[in-house]
Structure formats: C-alpha cells, structure tokens
View (cartoon, rainbow over the protein chains, first blue to last red):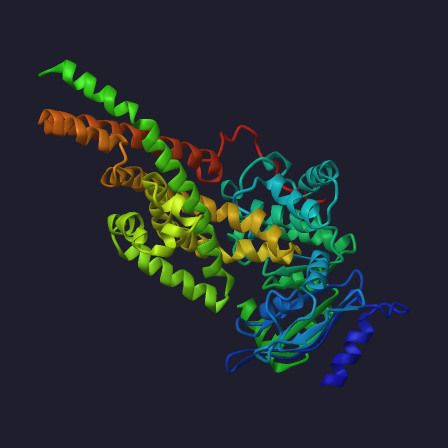
Length: 272
Length: 243
C-alpha cells in the first residue's frame, strides 16, 4: 500500500521540480489514548490542489491543523518550500517547536481559511485584510489597503469593505476570510472545511472563489465534503480513513474506479 | 421644607466632591494597574504567580473593605519598622494615601477576576486565526485578544467602578472630609439626618449616573459590530461566474 502511495504521490508531481511547496512525512498525533493520525505523508507541489476527504473522525482536520502547528503533532516532519519546521522535545516529553519565530514565519506563508470563518469580529472587513500584512509582513499600510480593496473586488464583496463580520452572510464572511488569506500572498493555502458551516445556497459563491484560485495555479490543501469540488477542481484526492491514508490519486480515476472498499463506500454515502 | 438648608447642604457637600473624585480616580487607576498584574499572573501559566494571585483575590475579595482600610491605617502603624521607615511612614500615616491604597488593593482583586473571565471568554477561533497568520504573541494580544477581552470586560468593570465610587464614602471613617465626611459633620451639627443624607445620596446618585453614562458611551463606541448593520443601501452584486 505505502509503495503505491509513494508512487501515486510521485506521479502527481511535475517533473524536474523536486522542491515540494509542502511536504509532510509520517505525521502522528494522539489525543490521549486515541491515535488520530497514524503516520500520514503528503507532498504538494506548486499549483497542486489536494482535496483531503474522509468521514468525520478520520483525522482530516487534525492533519491540516498539524501542518501549521495549530495542533502539535507527536511526531513527523513538515517542510514548507523545502524548509523543515524544527521541533524539539518539550519538558513534558511531547514535541514542541524549537523556534517559535520560525513557526510564525512559516505560518505567514500558509494562510488558513477556517470552517467558522474566524474573521476578527471587532474589525471591519478591510481592517481584517490589512491587519496581518501590516503587522506580520510589515508592509506599508497604504499598499496593503490598495491590495485589500482589489482582493475584495475580486471576491465580490468590495461594497461590504466597511462592514463588520457579524453584519454579513456566511458566504460573504467566508469570501472575506479567503481574501484575508490571499492578502498574505501565501505559498500554500489551507482550507479547513470552508463550506461546512454555510447554508446550502451560499456554498456555491465560496466554491466559485476557490475554483478561481485553483485555476490561477494556487497551491491549496482543501479539507472538504464537497465531492464536486474534489472531483472537478483538485489535482489530487487524498482519502483518510481512521487516521491513515486509505487512498490517494487523480480525482477522475479515484471517483471512476474507487481503489478501496472504504472509499467506494464513502462516495456511495454521498450519492445517496 | 427648608429649601435654604437643602441648598446650603448640597453646596457644602459638593465642595467636597473634588476630594471624593480624587480618592476614586487614584484608587481605581492604581487598582487597574495591580489588577492587570494579577491577571497576567493568573494567565501566564507560572504556578507561583497563579497561587499568589489566587491567594490575593481570596484575601481582598473575602474581607470587608472597611476592615482592610482600618488594618492599613490603624493597624500597620503599630509596627515600629513601619513608623521608622522613610518610605512606608509618609504613606501610611496619611489617611488619604491609606484610603487610596486600600481601595486600590481591594478593587484590584475584583477587577482581576473580571479581566480573567473576559480573557477566557475570547473565542478560541479569533485567537487561532491570529496564530495561523503568523502573528507573534504580543501582536496577537494587542490586535486581537486584548480588544475583544476589553469589550467583554467593560459591562462588569463599569459596575465595579460604580461600586468604588460608593466605597469612597468609607474614607470618612479615617477622618477624611470627602462628601460623606462633610455630610456627617453637617448632620452632627444640625441633627437633621434626613435632609443631609438625602442631599448626599442624591449627589452620589447623580455622580454614578454620569459614570454609568460615560461607560455606556465608551461601550457604544467600541461595539459597532454588535449593533444592527448600517442601512443596506448598496445592492450587493453576486459573484461573477468568471472571476
């Protein structure tokens, strides 16, 4: 199985590009006695859009959150653009970042979009977009404002730029959150179930924005339940089952001929 | 009804208002500084700091302010080393300083609990977003945690401030002629407790009303996101199919 996976991962990478935008090796994570991630590896190259699927409890969100260390993995390696996030042994025996500055620098390159948007509620939309670029990347405010307005136009909520997040619909908030992530000019974008908290009729507007990002060649890791997005937009699909990579491959192939019984069952449940 | 007596009493008590305000302002301000320190100790994760802050809150929240004031003013001067200390004695022999100190120590205990609660109530997602965008700890605190916690703390903290306004009346017990002390003196001189105390009560009432309004205004300024949204005059365009 693991040889197959390695081969699949390799075949998906463009030739001649050996520096992956993001590479995760053998990531493990337990909550108490419960092992949520049992050694997960993944490689994404520039322009890859990898959909991470799995039923609830399969560890897909935890995996994503372990990449930017919102959760601390117990073991495993994360490299962003070739740079290894250095870890050390904490006093309690668990792994912890060796250099928090490095983590912050890497995080700034890995913008995240959350299931519940997590826009800063006391700031207007525009302030939300400007906060991190000015205070983390130290870019001039005027330049950030200009970029922020352009991004808001792009996601179609420029008219709402002076609104506070609670005054907008879920779809608008999530588009604002995507614009906030884009404002960092990230190398890789992490999406943690970006449409799961939305009313069904608002899902489309967010998926359209994400599709346009995929089309312009952004590198994206997307934890999602949107089978349509996984099948049509992503360049690779990774299916997690009980904390392990059950299958990984080209979406068309995966959906046409499910490689495992688990994945077959999983998509059958969605088509019901 | 003797309106002249009312007017003269109100005027006399009002003349003591600056002193009341002085005790209140310094007590609250110094208390705020101590409370911030205590909150930091509680939140920092250092066991020693946490235990100290817990013990502090236990003592100063659990005993009457009047007991604390008496202990500081009458009690501490019993010790020789206090009377001979060039730093402590100038402070502790002065009833004004003692009152401010007692108020500050007392309100710090309450306020630190209010702040601790507010910090804990900041939604995790808001902090996670700040982390995920690479904000260093202090930036994160300044831009996200503190502004949100402040808004959460304000209603309870304004109540504490109003309690402190009323607590300034205790200063009269250690010889300070602030509003309550002044009122008591007039009462003793004239034997007209109803009129005098009513005047004092009304002034306290109006003072607290203005403080409450002031806080309500600050709260209003800080919470545009909690008010109904502005009139939706601009029609929002749908996302274009091709971006």
